[in-house]
Structures are given as structure tokens and as C-alpha cells.
Amino acid sequence: MIAPRKGRLLAGAALAAAICATPGMAEVLEIGDANGATLKTVALDASGEWCLHWNHSVTGGPVADCFEIRSGAMVLTRSYMHDYAAGLGDMPGRGVQRPAERGGYWIEQIDEALPGNALSLRVGNSRVRHRVVHAGREIDLSAFAAGQRVTLRPRAQ
Image 1 (cartoon, rainbow, N blue to C red):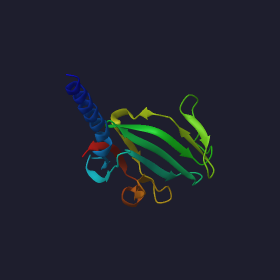
Image 2: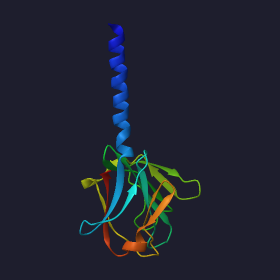
Image 3: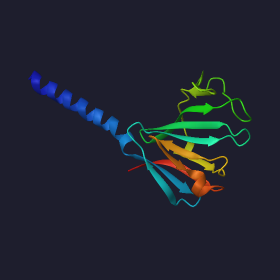
Image 4: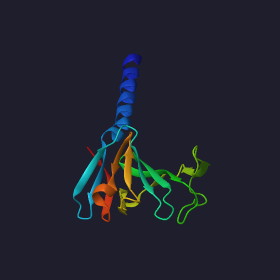
């Protein structure tokens, strides 16, 4: 009688592991225009992490916000800032700040789910150069949507 129960427990654990691993593998990041039409999609790997990089509109320095898709929800996990330029900085109680290897700083452990499970932004021109970065690939939003409002959201594949 012990063997069948042990088998059920192992099978249940394997099924739970498969379910927990599935969301990151089945997600895409959808980039849509103001009318809801899909402009591009980015297949996300199992980590579900992607970053939005851009150049600060005043200083030109690099800035990034990084997100993870967790069980279908888009979560801001960390941000990079080159300095304390206009509009940049940390907020007490929101993440942990640490110096970046090549200057600037990261704010990590932010872990905030985005309202509405989406990120909307007006894409900057080629000088601002908004781009989605994931798994060594880069999609230059400014190249095809400069001046337009876009919405980035996760979608199950």
C-alpha cells in the first residue's frame, strides 16, 4: 500500500513542477499601437524577463526598467539609472539600491506588478531610442513607432 501512495506523491510533484514552469515558456510580449493592433511580438524564454532601455531625454545617459512575467502578470523587478538626473532616483522603501559595475546604479527587488498588466508609453525619437531587450535581442521601438503611444503586455502563446 505504501508504494502506490509514494507514486501518487511523486506524480503530483512532477505535475506541479510542470505547471509552475509553463507560464514563462508560454508567454510573449505583445507590442500594440493606440488602436490595439499588434505591431510586434517577442517570444520570451522561460525566465520571462525583458527590459525596456532608453536614453534619458535630458542627459542622454542610459536608463532601463526590467520586468518579469510571473504567472501571466508583468512585474517591475529592477531599474538602472546612469545618475540622479532629472526625474531619476530611488524612492525610500521601494527596492534596494546598489552601484552598477560600470557606473550608475541599479534599484533591485522592486517587485511591483503593473496596474492593468500593461506598460503604456509614448515612444521617443531616435535620440531617446526606446528599445525592448530580451535574451540578447533588441527591438528598436523608435525605429517603427517614434512619437506614437504603444502598449506592452504579456500574452499567452
